[in-house]
Image 1 (cartoon, rainbow, N blue to C red):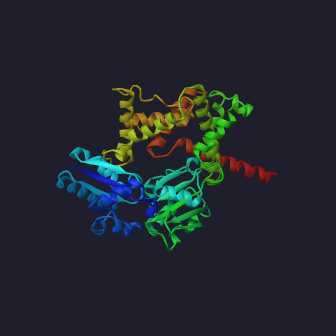
Image 2: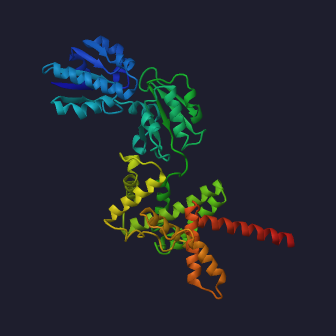
Length: 452
């Protein structure tokens, strides 16, 4: 017993493969995932009985439920037929955008049901023909529903994108909003309907008009051309690699991890300055400058064989997933405070530490002193260790005011206690001092201007 999944192509009978046509003609009965396909009239003339699963679309609330139900019925039929094959026909290619195929391939073998794939032309090839595109130029192919349900659009805007299965104006609206996170509203796209059939239409429109098209249906595909300028992390890394190439920039080529250290710090502080000024335009620029420093370090490591670029991102992605079991796992948390407690526990497990003696590992020695003190105190507090009681600040301040000479150690204790007091009140002392510095600078500038 088995299930034969036949690809029907995009809808033109001329695009059926010879193998697919032979299987369709020899079948006593063919079950279509849906009868909403241009090839249906041809099948009704050359096949035996033709059935569809369109009724399941009416019975179920979601597409995943539809696909589950169809796969279940097909497997039931395969078990009941005592050795006779079940012929199941789907639009396009059985392995391009066809969830029922995936379900059958995953589940049927466990029940001794063989699944055979009869290939068909997918929607991609006629779309390439309609638009005159070369597929190996780096074109990406994505499913519309996958695209709009991801937390972030997983596409490279420097390469063309074919978005398949834009089957309704609602899906088109969701696709438009998702693409709008990466592309300008005026970016010209192509809407291709019924590619490869006699009803084929190609319309070039700005992105913002996508969901205003009247003819969007289950045969609609969208093509998004690449942006005409570098705009992705891969694009930045490519530029940096070119700068570091033998015929690149002499200054960039001579840089090392150590020589770039001050530049990294400078750019990080420029980002902080833009944040302090609430200047989002400048923040956009400064984040780019900071990203350049990261890209340079990644490129140097790549050239020296220290680590691969993918290891940088794989490492932080793995760490984020591991340290957020309440998001990517089954752990339940009440609030942000419990999140931080769990975070420290997970870190201790990662370090293999059974106690808290290594709690301060990883705190950079180059951190500004106020930030370093706050980090130490926060980590200690998460394991139940508080630096002192609230009255210590007053005692230290009184001692400082009565001190007759400069006592650097006493001043350090006083500042440490001030950081502790700020932490208990939910104030970041580094930010507070930076804002006080800015206010002083403004007062000084005003006084200078008034006196001039």
